[in-house]
Length: 221
Image 1 (cartoon, rainbow, N blue to C red):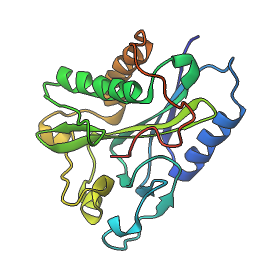
Image 2: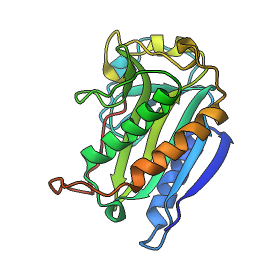
Image 3: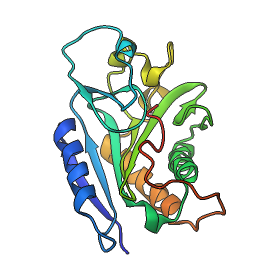
Image 4: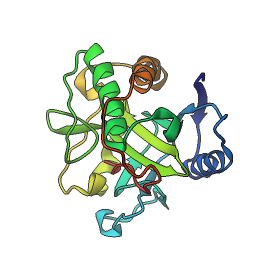
């Protein structure tokens, strides 16, 4: 079944999140998967198990308590966000493998840009020399995935300094621009999406079965 890509442009976080929930609630086994590509105005989001103390100071940036896994993170202009609206049962993967595939797609895209990156088995996401460049947070409900990934492209990273990113004190973040790669968010999307499609379409490996209705597939990190 063909996977659709929807370009949402710049859109507020909460309406997009509510649309993800609504899409997931009404989808059936015949519903095509979709990837939603978006930039958000400045916003902090706090996951299901998120602790407010990881927000280190109060600012005029809104905070939205959301239903993904993990702690607090920041979204803002110049960051690429891709939401994965996927039929998890049809995909035939375990949660851990899905997380690895998303990470590996980002790592492959960064390699194309001349950047050596890696994942971290203890803290999902993608890192360059120990600094986080991409975050991952998923929700699985009724056999379907929503939420997704964010990749820092060319943004003001200052708001990350006002939180413990993903609940990790002192965690540093980076972005493509600071690593010498000049791309717009649209250009970064065009580079990432083929790798993401390849990762999602690869045959499933043998992996122990898990609860596919797990509330939090991974941490937001």
